[in-house]
Image (cartoon, rainbow over all chains, first blue to last red; front, side):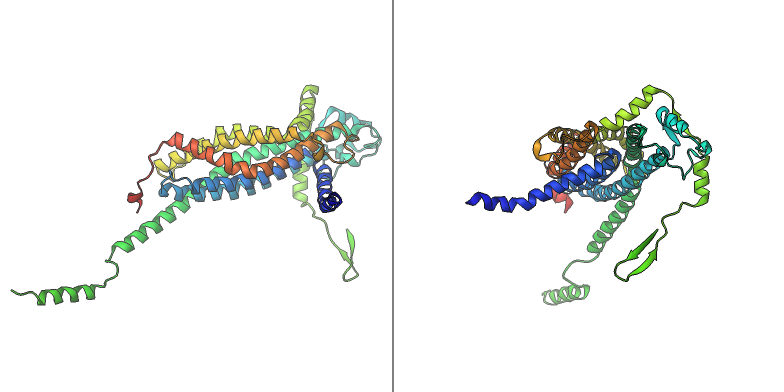
Length: 221
Length: 177
């Protein structure tokens, strides 16, 4: 009797799981470039969280270095995530556009375009030109070759974008930001120390002098 | 583009994003490029099919080792000691992150052949689509796995490698106060 109840409990979960699988298939099954950009961005978010925790809980790093490294990590995370998505996505989108308009093409695509009657060849590669909207694109068998070529260029562009953003743009920006933060924080820490050193705690100068006089008057000479 | 707003029952005209003419002209002026070599063409197509997120992570890690420590080592706006820490941590982070990232992504993508992860009508899909699906699903699953391994493996490994490379003595607790 228990089995059908359990089945009822897991039915919606199984349905959601199936739906999720279908979404992944639809969204990324034919777009590896887009998948790499999206999962890459998510990956940076998660690993940044872990790296920040690693500094916070590392007692071998002195506080002065932590003051630099923690903001460095936050800056790293923010710039990494933003620049990764912006640069990589832009690179991929530009590559897609170049292939779609025929600006970058392989021999098969050129052959297909040459075979289209009455096509104004001067328009190939222009912003408004679209290879996929040409007559015979779906029937001539070029669709699959085009898709494979476009995916390849997309992945290369995405990879180039991710290297540029994660390995060059991010380290430069985060170092600049983190060193500024370190200077400000160290200045604040020093100011705090100085403030505490200026007067003895818990007693005012007036009280101190009163005590001194009181003690000295009770002295018997 | 014209659409009907169901709430107000009005016809709303929305203009799609239009590229400014000057940028269009600049784009149109770019020279066209045709991949003449069949070998190169095949390589590009195969790379698109075969490149998984594990490959991407590996390539990113390898190039990161070439650029990031160099950038950190030339950061003149911090003192020498901090710079040393920064370089050591960057190297440790790249090594730890790349090792676990590649291994977990690779393992998860391989594991996507199991039935619970496959969508309906799996058999009817083209081989390339099947491979891309496994790549995508494996990467997403690996991100979930890495939620834990980031804390259990990455972070302690980064900490260990940083300490090995810097070998600074533990700060005196009394001195800090």
